[in-house]
Length: 402
Image (cartoon, rainbow, N blue to C red):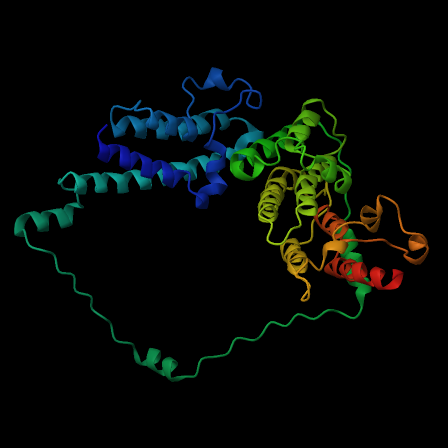
């Protein structure tokens, strides 16, 4: 291929792998693992994915851009062919069709660009084509602005109606609210069956494909000798995607809720440990958890409805995390040190693993910001009030104890 073709193909690939298409393209970024797609290579004679497509392009495998187009289309045709008759895989069909439409749109734009760069012409519609070929002049488009009717004018003269303001009131009677909330939070411990395990595998694989940048930090246990000792002192329940995969393979999960809790624990541990001001790992963990929640809703809740197989996380958990982040950013005016430092972990962490004398006699419920984060992410809080109450309790305990 010449430079123009290579540039055009690269633009198409970039368009298909763009972040704004992350809800669809994550399924097609890497080769299909037959471990999770039994008989795939029997049905699909020539596998293809966006990652392999890019490698072929970089290695000059394609003699023309049309060969590239063919392989690109093959990715989504394979997905439709393999998954069309598998009930549990119907979720793949819509993203495949959406990506096919996106490819066609990008291909047409690429062809027009190729024609311009090569000095050729692009085929126009029949009507416009005949006009341009006979006259050879530039087309002039005239827009006629229609006058408003009298009814329109009369409406225009009227002052615009103000939309009623939406007011949110917290009911003073909390009994009905708490009752409905407890019903909403009623969780059923659904046993891990083969079909449910298959859905968990889909979440795990989709997460790695959709968030490869974030996932690379969570693939293995923390073993860095520089931090591992400190990490184990702060994180009592380590978890990573590799361990989750092993537990799935060995059928170690008794319920679906246990699997979801482990996924959430990966993000929770990251947020609890990485607490420096403007820490770069915190937004990574939030993005990871956001995607995790979306995938769990799609692959688990949708299939189990109206049953609730795991605890719900607060609808405003991201905003709650912003509150924690703002607290972490606070610094002392006199020395510039982090104000929240002694509130990030349990008191016994700062006292060599031992609780100060008499502390547990004075404090009924020891709490720290790390504990608040864990409760928030694991779905322990049933309401925002519970989250706020625990946040306040962190400083109240300090005043009471000292």
